[in-house]
Length: 248
Ligand SMILES: NC(=O)c1ccc[n+]([C@@H]2O[C@H](COP(=O)([O-])OP(=O)(O)OC[C@H]3O[C@@H](n4cnc5c(N)ncnc54)[C@H](O)[C@@H]3O)[C@@H](O)[C@H]2O)c1
Image 1 (tube, helix red, strand yellow):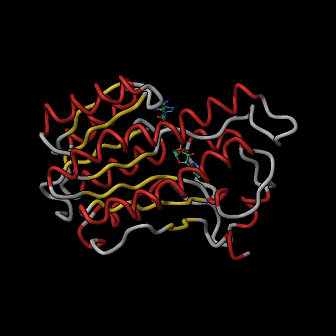
Image 2 (cartoon, protein in one colour; image 1 turned 90 degrees about the vertical axis):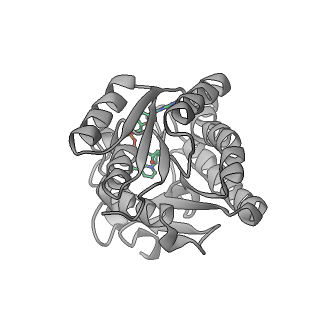
Image 3 (cartoon, protein in one colour; image 1 turned 135 degrees about the vertical axis):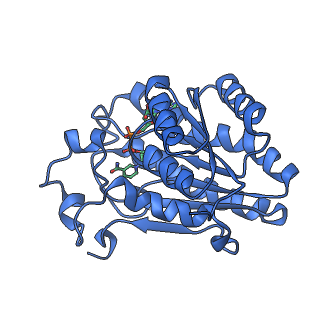
């Protein structure tokens, strides 16, 4: 219950799905939580749940693709908790307007890049100097199995998650000397409310999950490990949570 006691975590996309499950898992192990989401109501509900369980949480509204909004959210978090030891970038996700490069909606391409890739860049850019000042930290960026294996039908999303993966490795190289670790999680199918609403069991990725699709908690447990000092020598890795889909 105390793997993260004394640590403060900022989780983007904390109002739903993987971000929410991760925030709850980190809180159960003693971390104080800054819950950042564009849907403040949802982040507020997660904050209330954490506080009912005896934890500490602050909900902040943010669009991660807006630099000023990211700055304001980080400032609010620091005003309450003074430091940020863990950053989890979970805000984002694909959309049904995505598709093959020859067909996808070009506005949708840039929306996806802005939220999933640029949003991850903005939060890292704002938080890394804080971590350097306080002696280190752990960043966990949520990419996707799509960034690793060949997929079809979501090329904007695949490109953005590929960018998240390689950018994370570059950051891991550059900030290791400041004890800032940067790791990537690459989930396959995770049955969050959003995904469960549109993914069909005949989807090829779904069918390749040898262990079946994951729940948000399956990703959260790995984020919890990477956030903790148990992973103090782990940086620049990409960990798959895909039910074995990538060895299918
Ligand atoms: N669910 C899956 O199968 C799956 C698989 C691989 C990767 N992922 C990735 O995991 C992450 C979380 O996915 P999820 O299924 O939990 O999604 P979700 O929709 O359940 O949760 C995403 C959260 O991000 C918030 N958000 C969206 N845009 C935002 C923005 N611009 N600024 C701030 N908050 C924003 C939403 O309000 C929501 O609360 C995403 O990056 C997604 O690409 C999900």
